[in-house]
Image 1 (tube, one colour):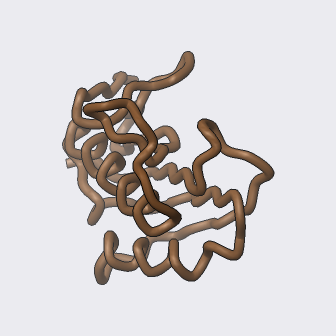
Image 2 (spheres, rainbow, N blue to C red; image 1 turned 45 degrees about the horizontal axis):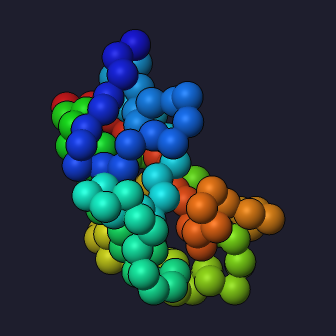
Length: 125
């Protein structure tokens, strides 16, 4: 296993890695809508937050020698399932024609009281 860490995505806010590679896969920890330069949650609602989450995921995947096109599975955590349609629009824009397996769940609360967190598993190389 190898730990993946990059300054182009928010630093972990607990005892975990941004991602871990094992075999031919990279396991990305859940990304929050945090600006990596400032450490602040991005302003706006679910659209802006989902967009930032995907920017952060892409940065972690790049650091691991992978990409959004190599994602095989995502898990989306929403603080309000009423945000599903808006999140899904940004999700589709970030993924393009690529459609990995996905689960979306509503949770009672997310770190920093954000609207969305997304984790993924992707192939390497």
